[in-house]
Image (cartoon, rainbow, N blue to C red):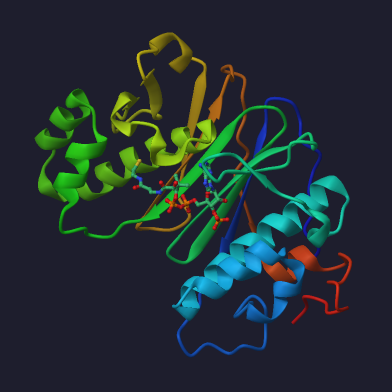
Length: 265
Ligand SMILES: CC(C)(COP(=O)(O)OP(=O)(O)OC[C@H]1O[C@@H](n2cnc3c(N)ncnc32)[C@H](O)[C@@H]1OP(=O)(O)O)[C@@H](O)C(=O)NCCC(=O)NCCS
């Protein structure tokens, strides 16, 4: 099935997800199983980064996420995947300054997610819930005083998902800003009531600007948290559901890579 990218409407984001199930002994016959052979679609710096991964599964996940990003942007722009020429801001956020697209990528565990919109700064994060031994110490570093108080009042059984809910919301915001963890995440304060959508209430000293952010939580699978954050958006901003894609479907019909290989099973 070919992936159909619908035109982006103003005040809409489109969300895409890829499953990356790479068992250590997985068959290497299909790019959706093992994508190492399809690096011809990547830029030299991406290939160099891929080669620096010692763990084959992590390398495969990086390559898959980049292939998915290139394949999707190529479909939005009517271009070939390898012609996508990323710039990076000072904190490493990939950008396409000349294109009318804002996008962001995240990967964790067996999933990668990509958010695309027209004209708003956008950030996305997913996290696989891992039971970090130092979770409460990390919470102390990333939560504001009020967030920390609410977290401490939760029963232990609710803390893991509350922790990752806060983490993904905050990280989506700092990724939309393009600052990564250079931004003091403690001062990015989110309201996380269990029965209400997440809301940004303070960004640094600025609680007015925070009102113009929209957060949207999603789940790719049980045991994962996810959030997309958009800056400068009103209540009318819309988030249609997650679109699931495979690399084979995404690259079907797109031009072959430089050496003529096609990403097909
Ligand atoms: C980018 C950053 C913010 C997130 O990294 P991460 O959680 O390891 O990875 P994610 O999967 O969420 O995102 C990685 C992708 O974001 C994009 N990215 C890189 N730098 C970015 C930046 N400054 N802003 C936005 N996006 C960025 C890239 O596409 C990157 O993927 P790729 O290089 O594999 O193509 C990183 O700078 C970082 O600081 N990570 C630590 C995360 C943390 O400790 N968070 C605490 C809770 S808030």
